[in-house]
Image (cartoon, rainbow, N blue to C red):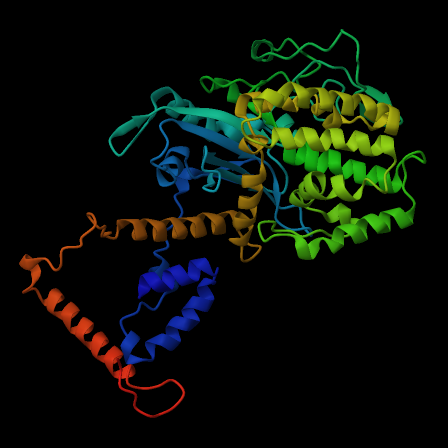
Length: 502
């Protein structure tokens, strides 16, 4: 009974006070007099381990542990443990500056099994990335050097990729932000300041910017690229490259960056590309009319472009891949439509498996897209995100489909973390306790003995068990069921007259 109550509480996010009130009602009945009085007993709530909690600046950091997360979420169909790490900020509410900075992870390819490694809470981000990442780097360094033993079998561990948006990446790498002149983390291009914004005009000549290297980052050669004299402590992780092991997350770079900017330019951009309001309304009505035809696999249905500022990344992805290629053909100019289709077709290639033979084709499409962006919309709109399209094909060559190195799984798990908060006071402690309760329930379910069939059996009852009480009880229920079926066969479904069966 207690385990069923615990599962009900956690699955429906019931508060402790509500469960306490329910227990008072249940205990008035003699059948439930043995149920514990306190919800913490039902949920097996434990106290917080203070050794895992430490103060950083004006906030707190709790380290859940990477090794324990791997053991709890390990799947037996992997031969090597490749970790995908996600780091980003999570605002708790719009009315305060209170925020989380979680370090999340999952074992590839199981991106639905995201688990927290550590979480920082404060009114602003930590002032030092090395202080924030210290516990994570120390444990990761130990695991990648020595491996981990699960079920008496050793496994090698590698940090395959870290997924961040541009502000989070500049923070954890301790480099210039996306508005800096030398902010590209892949190449050494120098930005320009045009019309009060930093931009990166495309150079079609043979003098392309040189690529950044891991060795140059460690030697602090690029002074204009470093945000301070200290490099990130992530460099201490074995077999980890600060340049190639950071992905250009397409969720932020393309969905929330490029596609959102295109819609903005079509609605409020230069006169040469700005659409009249009646065309914008026609695009919106065509998109909304497709809502009833969308299959259930799409969690979000099309909305009007009047709300594009509030679109989620999945909505921009739907418009990029499925809706805009159809409905824009009759509303956009020929040049703008062809320009957009270069991005759409390139992303279809980069989001599909087994398309390595089309990588160079996708690269050329994106080069044309960035180069033509200057002619259609202006050089000052070639932002850090637009420039990143020139490098995102490299991620496909390392990890294949871009969903293998995107922040979508971590963004989904952010909502799970946020749902664990029930009041403004001590949000980090609430998440720690709720997470422990869920892990306790999962461990209890796994510890129960599971019965599995040894194989098919079609030779009648086992003779050695015919005298057991379980076997006699089974025969009783079979006889009772058969007798009931024989009795029901005498009655017709429409009349109450007795009919003799054949």
